[in-house]
Each structure stands twice: as C-alpha cells, then as structure tokens.
Image 1: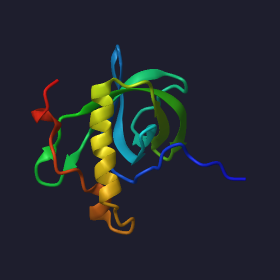
Image 2: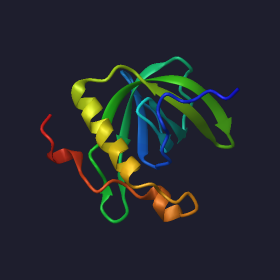
Image 3: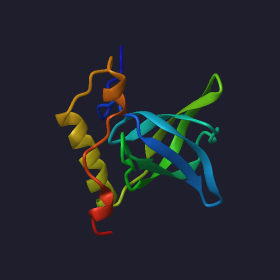
Image 4: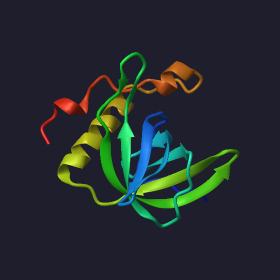
Length: 135
C-alpha cells in the first residue's frame, strides 16, 4: 500500500548550498521542493542525519540568482548517482519569516504548474527577489 506524502512535491531547479559551521560542504541543484524538504543533486556527500543550513537561490535566466533563502535542515538520505550525489533533506522547525518565504515559493509553484517535458520550464524561477523584504 503506497504511503501518501505530507506535502506535495514540485519539480523545480534552484541553486542549493549545504553549510555547516565549518563552511560549505556541498553545492548543487534541487530536483524537487516541498514544504517539508527538498531533493537535490550535489557535488559533495553530506552525512545521513547531519543537521545543517540549506541555502536555496532562484535561478533567473538572464539576471543570475536571487537572494538566497536559508533554512535549517537534516539530511535524510544520500546516494551516489555517477559523479554526483542525490540527497533528500527534511526542513527542521522554521521561524515565521522562513515559513513565509518558503510559502511564497510553494504558492508560485501551485499557481504555475510546470511542463515536465520542457527543460526551460524546469529551470524557470520565481518572478520576485527576496532582497526587497525586510529581515
């Protein structure tokens, strides 16, 4: 009997960095995102169970990257995929502000479903910049 996920997942490619107190341990790109966590292809191998900070930046075709959204997370699993690592992260409890920003990502994805066969659609990012929001 299949288990249902707590939150729907959305296919979206954002730039991602995993950081510990000692610095960046992996960089890559998300393959999907939900209110509960994300899955990413990475250039490094985080340890299962490791708590860290994940930084998610939107990719704009011509304009580069948005200001990153930084969220606390735990590595649930990590496996090799050729030269990269494929990892699943679960978000740890978020502040109200972090929840608001993450919900902005999710609302956009719910309102703008992407065509999985279209590479441009998979790499399309959100039409807003977090740098204008007070912190």
